[in-house]
Length: 175
Image 1 (tube, rainbow, N blue to C red):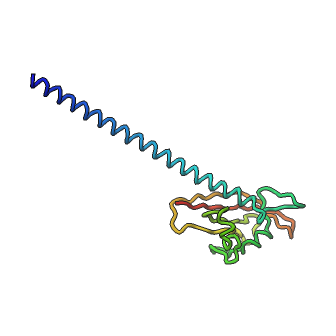
Image 2 (image 1 turned 90 degrees about the vertical axis):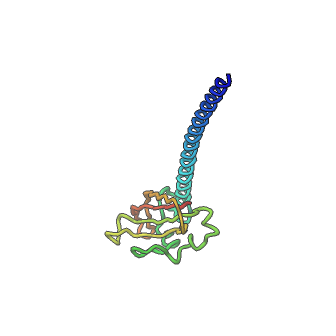
Image 3 (image 1 turned 135 degrees about the vertical axis):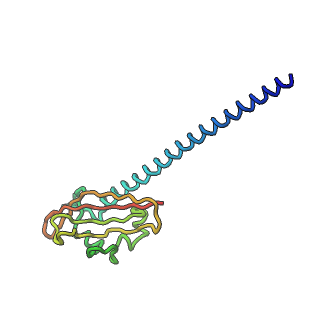
């Protein structure tokens, strides 16, 4: 009888050991799935923040085209662009006269950690390199994620009354 009780105790311990191992494997699997979902949520949040910055910069009256007080979507006024940033020489990365970067109290809550450049592609007086305006530059010193978005825009020159084709490049940074 004593041996039968010991055998049943040994079987119970073996079954409980296997049961706890299965539970641990299931918990590990579950936590990996939860972790991947959290990472996906963070990535979606970063992308939504980038889209928000894109929408905000294109809607800013400091850059937007208008004729007879009617705003044109996806159009940037060249005179306003020249006023808010100085045209950069090829290869330069910052502009000392930039009002967006020089007024962080006003523009940081809107544009956050990002860098915004406007490129005039066609017609381009600086062929083969595009004309570049640095609109805003506020990069994190150390960042883990950088999302770059390019949006086609027209650049309207009210002096010549001509449109040029360009793109606005918006890079957002996050940890």
